[in-house]
Image (tube, rainbow, N blue to C red):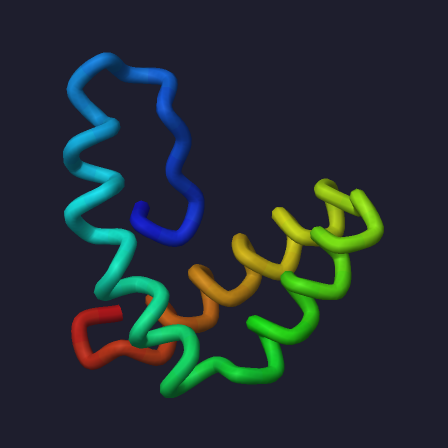
Length: 68
């Protein structure tokens, strides 16, 4: 899942880097409120709440997609 990716697997850094631009572009264009929340939580070091916003956004995006 591109919204909740880590570097745990050795082959993933390239994958994450390649797709990050598209994910950020989509989020800024379509999910501006979520981006603001993510930035606010990150700036104060509240990483669990930041991850919660990311995971909820991913679930909502998948649920609302034509294939979801």
